[in-house]
Length: 516
Image (cartoon, rainbow, N blue to C red):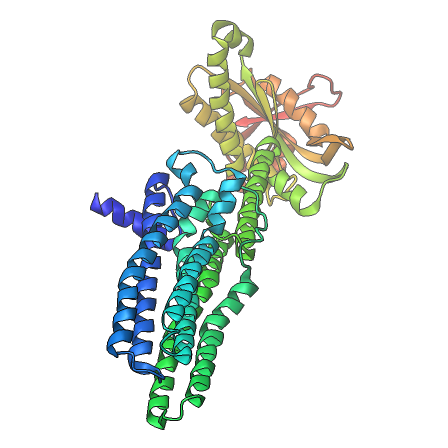
């Protein structure tokens, strides 16, 4: 249990809730923010007491019996009261903004606004309590000395501004997990109540410069009104104020800078992963300012890249990856170009009997296994499966991408394809025909619907050779022209020339070549 809570706490502090349960994130985040607000308030009270008792030059003795008793009784009453009110109101603000997390549902638009407004509402609540304290303690000491009452009131007020601001910055940091969940499925929008990057920067400057400078000015004004203030006492006060200002200013600037730098660092790392080809990356949208728009924009960009990659993959599966790649690089237009290419046609033998003896599901399974071998072998030899035609396929070598030896590749693919079909697809026999020559390869169809295809005599001849291949021992037949065009002597040596035959639909005889 403790390990799980520590894991949730680490996720909350990192601002990346991941798969952590919403209820756990809500509970730990609320407790963390409340603890940060209480701690900062107690530190603020301690600083005020230290300044007013030991550091600042005062017109009265703060340890005088009546003055001390009056103020310490007021502190003993008001501080617990303010902490109790602050905790209860803070919990109510947090619980009211995150009720959707406890109920396990998506937030409404109003609840999203409440979530992103939590730091501002907490700041307003704390500032109100500190302002009330300034009025109470200033008024309480007004009967003692007006200058003393003013110094008490302004010290409490300035400390309250700094304390409330630091607590607000801590709430922004610790509340990122809830903001990420709230904005997870929402379209990015500008929330006017959320300060932007420029306002945050000015806010950090105000805490680091404006508040301590105002305190120093007040100190000087008070010192000028007291004739008995010595140089050592004034110097001690300035040193103490400067040290406190440095610490609080540094904390404020660090929190402000980290609220901007941390999301940008996540974006930088995510961009690096995208550059390396990882499109499954995303960043949590845990900020409602311009930074959040940047995070949401990055996620939309990566989503678009994923969709583009999916479309390209589907496009490649339909027309062939080589054709798809060429279309994306060069664009598409109707027409074609002449290429010297080899055509390989493969066709199932006895497909009619297969369809009548097997169920449709079995036929589809057999066809998928058959075409899987055809595609793998064709790709391995640098070819393209141009189209599937029922129980057959047309494979092309030399188009659309050039090939050093298209005829040799087609002949080698025919032999390997037949061997693998016999070994891997039970009960299936396929006839293969191979031809070579000049073809026209390109996009054929209408302007709004076309396909990449290969047209020419070698394609027709390969289809006719497939019919004759059914009568050959190894069910493979190639044209003499394809064998002569093969550049690899080793491949040619594996084939033997046979008789010349007149193929159906042709007038000139074609001399056959079959595996030796």
